[in-house]
Amino acid sequence: MCRYKMSLTRRGIIMQLSCKMQPSHARKYLSLALTFAVSCALAACTDDLGTASEDGGSETDDATETDDATETGGSETGETGETGEHTEPRAPAGRLVIDEVYFTGSPPMTDADHYFSDQFIALRNISDEPVAAGGLLIGDVFGLAGEINPGNEPHGLADDSENVYMQTVWQIPGAPEDVVIEPGERLVIAQDGVNHSPFSTVDLSGADFETFVAASGKDEDYPTVANLELVHDNTGFDWLITVFGPSVVIASLTDDAQALEFEFEGWQLLQLPVGSVVDGVDIVKDADSAAFKRLPTVVDRGFTFASGTYTGEAVVRRRVEGVSIDSDDSSSDFELTDAPNPWR
Ligand SMILES: [Ca+2]
Ligand SMILES: [Ca+2]
Image (cartoon, rainbow, N blue to C red):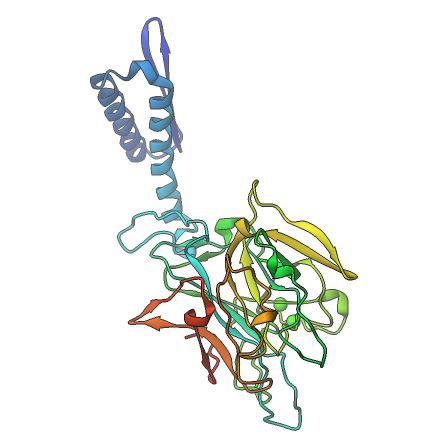
């Protein structure tokens, strides 16, 4: 480690350099510091020495970070590219999207029908920079998918263009950079992180995370798949996203976009401002269920749907010549598949 500090005194610029490292590294940082000091003097930057000094300081810190990343966890998190350049993971907004939602449940393959423990949601980094996903929220939006029973009506919360109203919300554990999604890569979230054979063809034993509802006493904690953290709980024995069509949101809170508890018709919901929403997909029961859209049009102008429950169908984001389509309109951004695949 090596740090230097510059200060402006009546006698001129004082530079202090302190190093605790191998001599070859020390020479490198001394050279960096001297280069900066000379260029600073040539640019007559004494008027804003404070700023210049900070810039110089961070330059040194960056160099140190690069070395640290290479020596310690850099290759693990993939932060250091093949060229050795250090690419800082970026915030999810505008980069991370919901890529596939498998919700309908498996067609009967054994005596067990109505099998839905194989549900999964896949996110994808569609940018060309790594994304820091630790702390990201993921949940399902409150409300029915359509007229499930005669007389069901929409709740009208989608008319609020400022907020979305969540039923259950989970959080990816850790600090933002603890979970990095590389460009083009997916992050898979399973209801249960296990191979669902023979009840389903979906194998989620390699999922990145699973939803484990400890309080129910009926959910299984698969040891090889990390658990999401349950931050707003309207689950049952597990996080069953409705097989009729769930609306799913990923969100990232900021100082300006905070979550609020919201009581509605006896339910405790979590209200998230639309400014926190990173991506959302409105999935309803069928083509005639537009009135049951749960998301305001500012988040999703359209909606998508499957052909029925227990059909083994998923909705997956369209790709054209390898490029994922994201126009905030699920009617055109998603298509139906009868071959759900966490690893596509
Ligand atoms: Ca589970
Ligand atoms: Ca687990």
